[in-house]
Length: 321
Image (cartoon, rainbow, N blue to C red; front, top):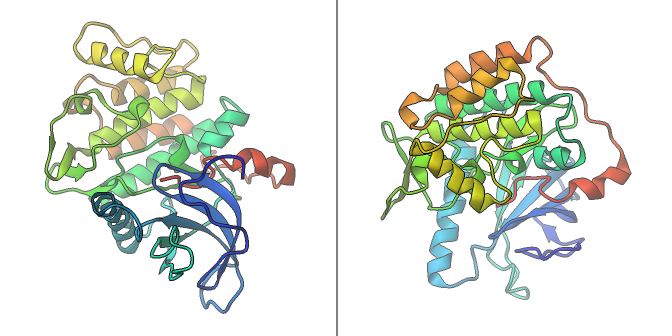
């Protein structure tokens, strides 16, 4: 492990029937590790990804926030089973008073991926399989929205790639169930994928109001990045791109998409990146347009198994918190 992990777990550590192996990814609040099954586990696979969330030891205020994030994610996993959403097998609680940094932590036992879209783009900008990947991501959004949920944090690190080339959406601790036209999520997001209406939204006691159209905006940004190796709004930094997004939303500037964006995808991205949420296409229309643009070969291809590449795929390879 070469970087600081939010929840450091030693190799060989046992949780339930699982033994921790190599680290996969980390975020601000939790960390993900590869694991192998070393005990009896009917219906459980031989390998999995363990997502450690430190809900046992923290300040009361931080504990409340962490438990809310865990409850969001667990609730979605328990209620939704779709082929484009990463699968959860178990939830466990660490009982280890001798390790106060781990004692009481919640552990999500998840389907293990080969890598993430973020790692793939770092190794291979503008991958040949981009149209197929985008079609499957659109399927995942349609499944989520059709079930009445908003993802809330769609980005390459939260798109997992399986060994057979298929895609899974992951990291649902910002996901929220719709209450009519809106849902409520914590006031956290990734700036480059945040729609302009949320850049200055009011944050109430229940968090920030969000619509499915926020995921559509994020898809437009992601599609532009995957297809052109560039963000659709100009700027050398995330802050500069956020300011450009705000200027575009106010009508001060126009949307200037990369000339390298294929014509068929240009209209899709424009339909996602509208100035207001009311103008955006919904998930059903998005899926239909993306499926047509991707063509018949939209299932993805099996990812090659190359051991030396594993180190390269670790960072962000499984849903970081």
